[in-house]
Amino acid sequence: MMDYCSKEYKFWQKAYIPIIWFVYRDTGRLMTVISNQIFRNIEEIKSYQKGMTEILAKKEGSEVTGINVFEIGLNKLVKNKKEYWTKIPRSQKFEIEANSGQTGWIGKFLKSPKLYDILVVVGGEVAGEPVFDLGKIFFLKSSDNMKKIEEFMYFSDQVVNPRSMHSGLYDVKGVFNLSLKTGKLYKGKIPKIDEDELMD
Image (tube, rainbow, N blue to C red; front, side, top):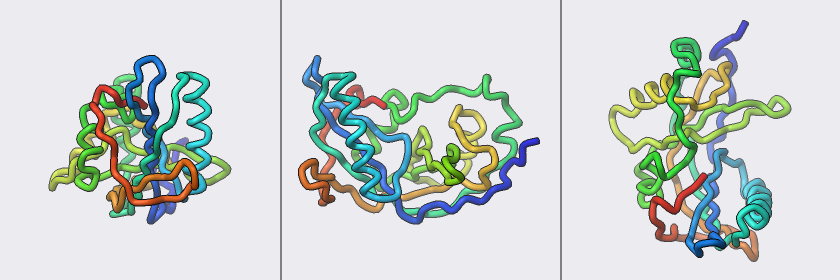
């Protein structure tokens, strides 16, 4: 029998979201890959970047041109509810393409990232440690966000460990570039891009 919302995980106070920019070989257009997970430190991002660079080169024949890194900080914990898993069968929940421009929010987020609440959930465990996933939608800061987040958790296909007691809300604290040559962070800007050039 499942013990819903019974395990309290320690959410990171500070974490990072990498966004990899690359030039698509067939069209020469600037594209981006947005990670579905958050990372604890820069070394983890470097490992992710190396793997994605190899995948993009082999699968897409594309060249990575830059990496933005969003530093995020924990704002507050949000209590999960058993009903998120029991009220509506998963087969009846609506699908959201993770971190896709098709959902409408991602292009706006890239223009003004500090205006958004970032939902982070426990997607699973690896060797007893939590895997923290990004919510498939970021929420423009407003007084009714808790209601919107609750509705999202009820009705979307977001994968969340049913034992997790909380999800987390994070704020963007800074935007950086990761040097492809030195592996060091420096303050940077987000390249201009059209929403239809985004992918997950």
